[in-house]
Image (cartoon, rainbow, N blue to C red; front, side):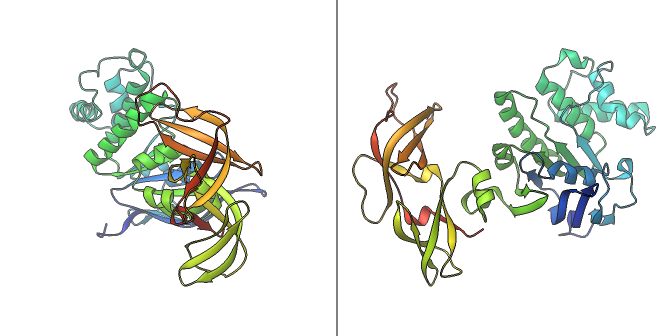
Amino acid sequence: MAEGLPIIRIKEVTKRFGQTVTAVDDVSLDIREGEFFALLGPSGCGKTTLLRMIAGFETPSEGQILIDGQDMSKVPPNRRPINMVFQSYAVFPHMTVADNVGYGLKVTNVPKAEIRERAEEALELVKLGGLGGRKPDQLSGGQRQRVALARALVKRPKVLLLDEPLSALDAKLREAMQLELVRLQHAVGITFVIVTHDQNEALSMANRIAVMEHGKVRQLAPPSELYEFPNCRFVADFIGKMNLFEGRVAGVSGEEVLVEVQGLGRFSLPGEGEASGEVGIAVRPEKVRLRREKPDEDMVAVHGKVSEVAYYGGSSFVYVTDDTGRTISVNQQNEARTAEPGVTIGDELWCAWKPRDSLLLRA
C-alpha cells in the first residue's frame, strides 16, 4: 500500500434491510493505517452494520469498501486481511487456551510447530504467557477476553475489528482493559476499529471517532475536538454531559455572535453565520462555577436552587434549577478532604461561566 493511503476506504456506502429500514445511509470515511478508530453511537445507529460490512458479513446495498486498496465487493470474509473480536468472545470451552488461539491457523493447514510458536507469541503479547494449557472456564472474564484477542492477532491481520468487546466486563475491569487495548494496539502497530456505544470508552482509546446517528456520520474528529467542539446538538448531547439552552441570534459582528437566551440575557460568543435565527447554546458542566454571590457582569449567570447532588468521590454533580424550571448541571471537584458536602439541596446559588466557554450550535 502506498504511504499515506488509508487502510480502509468506505465510499458512499448504504445498507438497506427490506424496503423500509436504512441501517447505514450514504457513509463515506477513511480509516488510516495504524490508527485506533472508533464507531460510536446509540443502539440502532448503524455502527455494527457498518463494521459487519467491513468484515464481509453484510453486503452494501450501494457504495464500495476498499481494504488495503482492494475492492472487497467479491471478497468473502475469510479472504479479507482482517480479523474480528466479538462481544461474546466465542472461545471454545472444550479446547485449551493454546488450542483456542491456534485454531484459526490449524484450519488453514499451518504446520503444528509454527502454530505452537505463534500461539505462544500471541499469548505473551496479551500477557497470558504460561496459561496455554488451561481451559477457558479456569480463566476470569478479562482473561477470556485476552484469549479472544490473541486468537484474532495470531493470524497477523492488517485490521482488527472489535464489536463491543468490553461490554460484558465489570466497570473496573473494563477500564483496565481499555488501557490494555491501547497498549496492545501500540505494540502490534495494526489498525484497530472498535464499535461502542460507550462514549468514555471511545474517548479514552481512539485516535479518531465517527459519531453516528440514524445511519449517518454526524461528526468525525479526534476525541478532544469532539468533546470541546461538537458540530451539532446531537453530538454535543451524546458526548459527555452538556447543558443545552435554546436561544436566538441577536446580531453578528466579525467572528462574534450576539445571542439571547431566556433567563441568561444577551452575551457574545465566538461564531459566525446568519445574523438571525434560532440556535442552541451549550456549556459543559465542568466549565460552570457555583457562586454564593452574584457574579461579575462579564460572566453568564443564572440563579437557582440546588435540586440534587450526586457524589462520585473525586467530584460531585450539582443540579441547580432556576425559576423557569430549567436545570443546570455543574461538575464540582471535591478538592478538600472532608465528609461534609460543599452544597446541599435547597441552597440558593448562582451558576456562572465565561461566554467564550459556550458553544454556538446551529444544527
